[in-house]
Amino acid sequence: MTTRTITLTTLLLCTAAPAFADGELNLYSSRHYDTDERLYSDFEDATGIKINRIEGNADELIARMEAEGVNSPADVLLTVDTSRLERAKDAAVLQSIDSEILEDRIPANLQDSDNQWYGFSQRARIIFYNKTNVENPPMTYIALADPAYEGLVCHRSSTNVYSQTLLASVIENHGEAAARDWAQGIVNNFARDPQGGDTDQLRGLVSGECDISISNTYYFARAIRTDVDGLPADARENIGWVFPSQDAEGAHMNLSGGGVAAYAPNRDNAIAFLEYLASDQAQQYFSAGNDEYPAVTGVELSPSVQALGEFIGDTVNLSEVAKNLPLAQEIFNEVGWK
Figure: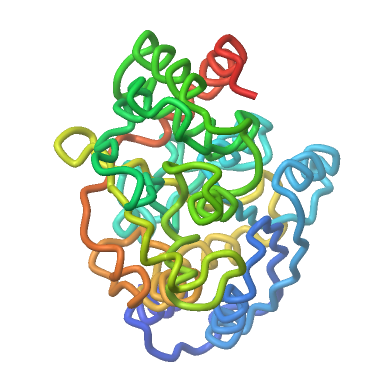
């Protein structure tokens, strides 16, 4: 067994590890969470590898890597949502890698089919509703398009990656025709034009602008853990939630993940970093620090995430879902989802 394998095995057991490599790692990241600092510092302490970070919008970082080409200093790209990971793959800024640790630790449905990207944390995209005004909330994504909910629904715009990936998963699970009907039904049920981020959809329930919305779980879990403007504790008590489609495909899961850059100058260090993100220690940080669900099964959840309850998540292969993204955008345009 090589020194590197021994060290990474030790990392996976969450114990201190000696440095196995000198040098550095150039990380391009669109994750903007202060809590990720602990991920980086612990990796540096355990390995002796210095992380140099460039942070920015995912599309800007991908475009930058394209422009830099073979001269790119990027070793790893970290970003949020399957659509962006697939966009990076399509732009040829990632490379395939072989890692037994990642293959063993990360569930198959959270990996790219060509091993160019891996998911490291998840967020369930679920239905939230005003408990006073909605006695019978929709229990599935498809039901959200029922005319019974006309004028009640808040949602993000069609240009948002969360919207795009959700529709892409509806296409994968229910077919193109059903997905088109679903998208049209949601448009018919809008309480307002699509706008804002996920927290704004939750604030819409508090303000009375709408009675039903969709949001990623970590936005609401964060409000449980700490103060979030517009979501005070007394108002949250009137917000209910549904993990959709528990008798069918399960709740749609958004992904945060990364891959090794196509021309990574520090390729071994890049693989080591991705393997570290799959360790129990790092996986616990994703939950405790940012209210996310770990990608690795069996890792303990933070109290704020546990408060949302147990559920069945969709295990559809996200690599296959990503192939539906162009069609999803076509459908959005056809039905007038702004």
